[in-house]
Image 1: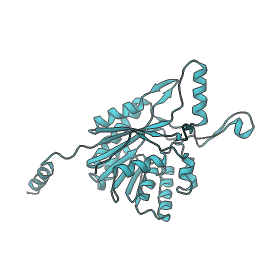
Image 2: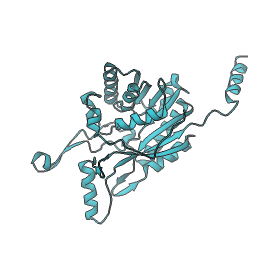
Image 3: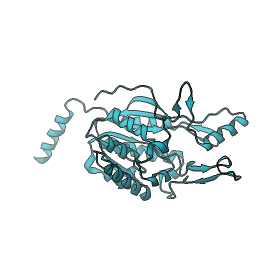
Image 4: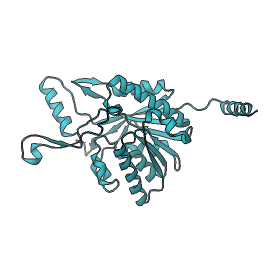
Length: 298
């Protein structure tokens, strides 16, 4: 299919909790690194058609799978952490109760071996949609003095992994190596011309900016994918002549501390969406493959 996209998508018009309310089981909010449902839905609607297959190799609580099911696509996800895999199954069941026409399944496993985990899907996926981890913990939920009237900041639901083998625990070189293996496996699942879409943002380590989108772009091309587009998915809202802030307490807190040190950093207000494609099968390649298969039988 031919897609027409703009460079900026207004995906942050509603806060995440509003987008999920009633559409996901309440326990889903325990996951601190969820993809925004509006981003997943926009990507799926843009790059797939009804009845096609969507894969998420790091599916978490199943946002990609749920949005695909509601749009009449079929979806398969792999999740390393069993507790999140169980929530993804619960969310798919909830979508089914709500009348979602698509179906989905979840596999608990290590997506660094995704082609071995899903051998029945090799060459079938129209879209792979996912996001790399940013660490074993994120900001999660907080209550500050302003909210409670008590001194200090209370945090919860900020950690999504205690397993040291999880990629989320790895330093950048090992994280990139693992994510590169995931992308290489996903290429095997894609049909010729299929799309890989990755939501990713830069992050800071001890004040230094890490260009994770740039690293992921390189990994994807090394896996044999061809760059198509880079889209800004807004996490803030667009009001009447102004932006509606969706930044977390800690994003704003860290930005203010940096400004006090003379470092003019800003809270992130968007996700980069990297869109890449598996090259189409070269002319005659399918016929050559069929001839090779016949020779093997003979």
